[in-house]
Amino acid sequence: MGLPRKALRTTAVGAVSATLVAGTALGLAPAAQAAPTGIRFVDITGDGGTVLKANVVTPANADDSRTYPLIVLPTSWGLPQVQYLAQAQKLADSGYIVLTYNVRGFWQSGGEIETAGPPDVADTSKVIDWALANTPADPKRIGVAGVSYGAGIGLLAAAHDKRIKAVSAMSGWADLIGSIYSGRTQHSQAAALLNGAGTITGRPSAELQQVFKDFFASNLSKEPELIAWGAKRSATTYIDKINANGAAIMLANAWGDTVFSPNQYADFYEKLTGPKRLEYRPGDHATPEVTGLFGLPNDVWKNTTRWFDHYLRGENNGIEREQPVQLKSRSTGGYEGYPDWKSVGATSRKIALGGTSTIRANVNSGADGGIIFLSSILDQIARLPPMASIPLLPRRYAAVWQSEKYASPQRVRGTAKLHTTVTSTKESGTLVAYLYDVGPLGLGKLVSNAPFTFHGQTPGKPFGVDLELFSTAYDVPAGHRLALVVDTVDPLYIEHNPAGAQLTFSSPAADPSYMSVPLREQ
Image (cartoon, rainbow, N blue to C red; front, side, top):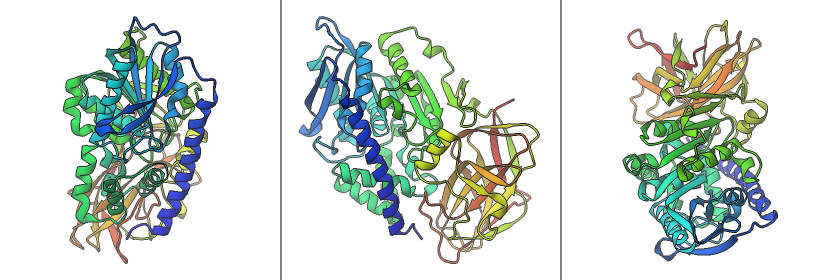
């Protein structure tokens, strides 16, 4: 059973409205500033003759007798070409030629939305061609940066164009299906946001329209096609080409990104063999970068500039000597450095999930991941994640396990993992796991969550479930507990629980169930 269409429409309208309001502000705020010397709006012929609307910002008093490093900025999903103008001005002031363009299918650019398909990747190369022919850009010093959609396109372009020497991919994806279909579960609010924004601000291709139709309809017969469609648009598919080309890759994301989860970036980062950097901060999709789009001080954009300064201009600014994995804690707001991702949460503690618990499906127990954007932004600004009263959760609809009280703070870092045995009365179903920080009064603050959907199981026959929750950095205070809650309904996801379904969780002696919690050493 899927999320009701009325709920999907409501979710889409709210999410799209918020995005378009933000997009309008982001588009107009930089444009309202004084136009910099050397800015011009141009038309660029993209792949197949498609016209791309773009703007070029050059250093003041640029000398045509010399060359300058080039940075290309593809726009985010649904946002206009002036999105990056404030940052483009800053980069130009420091000696870069900056070319930002509206990706095909959106706003005034021609074509249809290809969702980072081959035409989008080819467009990036065409834009580089144009810049080399029409500006004093240096062909040996080319970088690509972007937020969200622009980040995904930038990573793909680095696999297909050897001229690209550095990339900063902010709040993007490396695995598209691993983002919006993780745990074989449709992330309905995220997809509704993308679908709605694309329809309002652009021209979705027939292929994309069919993908969304099959996605929301839970059409399992189309699942192989969906996965193949996503793989073609995922940088992880082309990891060998990216490594062979050797571009320096910087990845930045938010712990609470409800569109592109942090896990898929970490997996991709570990596969990179060239110069690389991975940054995580509190927030939701693209919220850590948003102040930088207004030209305000911003850590992500600051490090992006440092990244390009070193790898395109050869500046000895020390970024290559810093710990390459940089995490900002949701609890302290401080940064922590690690030599690699596997060093994050170097130790782990298991919470035994003993006994047997049976829950009924199709009812939201009161534990959920919150609302797209709103919940993670509250966590980012006020450290107020989604909450639930753990003692009051109805055990008919939620299975609950708790740890002992911790005598010292527990610094959760990385990816918590659930291992359990499930028996269903139906062949299909969905479960959602939540990890809570529980205080003395029983109020739980959400640490992480993740969905899991199964199909084709034999009713009454136990099967194993291994589920990675979304990666995070969160401190559990001394005197608190950790609690695992599992139920079957969450507004963030489409669930697949037939009417009358029940799920039983057990812990066989030969294969005990547990939650493995990664911890930073004290």
